Amino acid sequence: MESINYHLELTPAQLKITHTALRSLLDDFGHDEPEIGAIIREVLAKLPDEHAIRAIQLDTDLEPKSPAPAPERPGDGGPTAA
Image 1 (tube, one colour):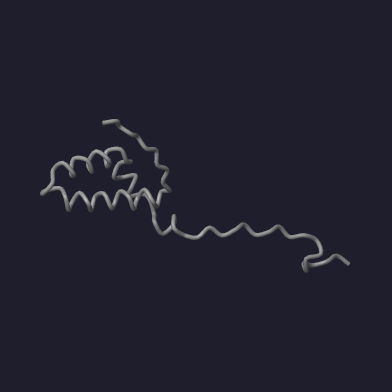
Image 2 (cartoon, helix red, strand yellow; image 1 turned 90 degrees about the vertical axis):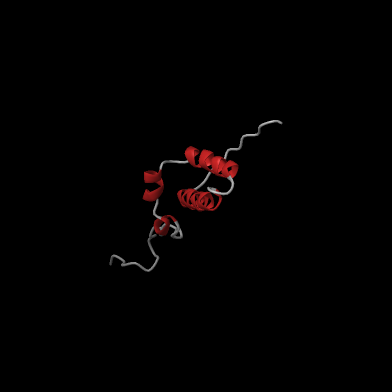
């Protein structure tokens, strides 16, 4: 059987969610199905360490990005020199 490798780009928030989901899945499969637990542990080992994952702040990473304010132009209602 041919082995296929995948490259996956995740935002910090997506990474934290993925890590949390895998840890939860490991809790479900860890005892009854050791083969699945081993695969989950292999994937978790490829992710950043627990300290790095905990440092990701979901509330900050999920805030909508607001556009930068447009620069003021002369004649746009600002004070005028007399």
